[in-house]
Image (cartoon, rainbow, N blue to C red; front, side):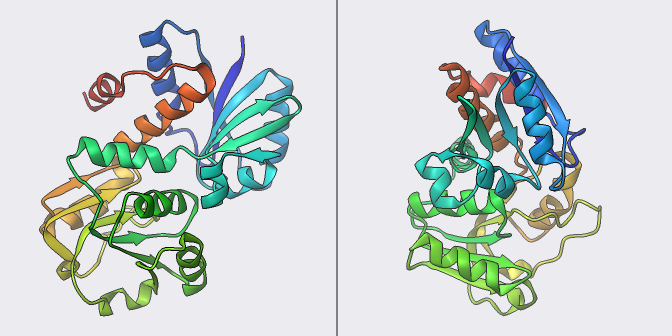
Length: 269
């Protein structure tokens, strides 16, 4: 049977194997999908071993999305634009890369009743998933995108890569000096993963703002608590995005897209 997997570090917490098993059961497709622990140093070796053992498709999560991009012989247009790969497809002796994070994010925003067109967005982070989200928001017509990261270099590079007049960069240390309020605040950093309180000036949020963390479960709780306390109308973790991007990957591999609503409801329960 063709094999599929998700690579990352840490990976034991991943819901992806369960999600793809549920997709397969829903559509009557037998799926062999597992989680494989791999960091920067061992990813190439682990991916080669996976391919030799029948691996034909894989997802990639933290911290390997840039590594996966570099390993691909060919890439989709959206992966090439954002410089990030989270979905791999075996193509002969090589890997073809794609990025489903951006479309997964926008589909979850739609589920939440939020339209990014014409909105001011504060994006925290400039890593692989943040890059995919940034390009998706620009394509969706966001009016302004302020990218915040610990170092200005990465935010400046991403803002320039977007080729979007409304994209700006800011160091995390200067976030308190930002002027105005944002309709959407997206946390694409690891802040909060260690359980410490998440802190940003509450005045950054518009009254009807959405606070969204790309993480899910315990890792998202600190940011979500801050968003609610700061007055966000809606606060959501990234479980919906995880399901939506997984569905996009599943469709790439199997040619059929599952009903994500039913799967997300089952996971929430």
